[in-house]
Amino acid sequence: MTQSRLPGKFSEIGGMYPAHLLISQDELTAMVQRLGKQITEDYCGKQILLVSILKGSFIFCSDLVRAIDLPTTVEFMACSSYGGGTSSSGKVKIIKDLDCDIKDKHVILVEDIVDTGLTLSKLKEVLSLRHPASLKICTAFDKPVKRKVELHPEYVGIEVPDEFIIGYGLDYQNYYRNLSEIYAARPVEN
Ligand SMILES: O=P(O)(O)OC[C@H]1O[C@H](OP(=O)(O)OP(=O)(O)O)[C@H](O)[C@@H]1O
Ligand SMILES: Nc1nc2[nH]cnc2c(=O)[nH]1
Image (cartoon, rainbow, N blue to C red; front, side, top):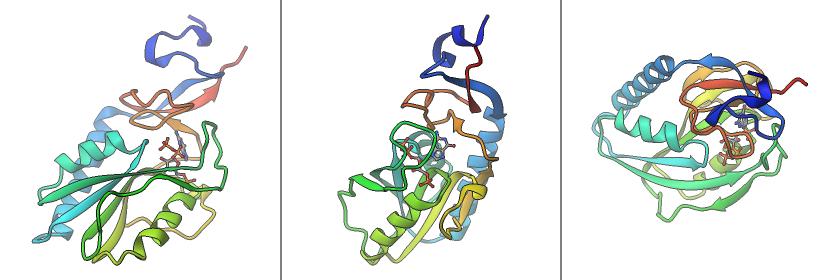
């Protein structure tokens, strides 16, 4: 089988394909359980609001919320800065804002990945003006080598190398979100 004829959800898209397994399903499960336990301990006795940043975090957030043993609500926001490619445009746009008031709430922003940090630093700035009781960040993956702004998420699942990763909600051109593990996306060699 050549690289360009991979079957089903592993098929080549736009000259890229899931070339190299980086993080297995078992590692993802362990990561989610660890973060859920930590959040449950840190917010003991409180109610929390998870804000899932679409689209990438929808799978992570759906696993994380079930690993948290606290009264928890979930809301959604959508941002865009990548425009379908593998590098940030640097321009963060809020495409969908929250439908609820976050004043006096304990808010945790749930992301799939922090890369340059531009998306989350913009979101933190916007949401802090709404006076939440607290505002923290929980990210499944962190790529600190690509950081362009100072940003230190309070909860980090797994640190990843300088690779464009796909799977478990993360896309290339909106595909590959349905891969159950994390892969490094690489160009197909002819
Ligand atoms: O730290 P940064 O360099 O800002 O990158 C992180 C952002 O990039 C991805 O979103 P993307 O714009 O690809 O949208 P998506 O979640 O809809 O795929 C990811 O979900 C983060 O929101
Ligand atoms: N799919 C995907 N989206 C990103 N957004 C910022 N970094 C990445 C990455 O490595 N993979």
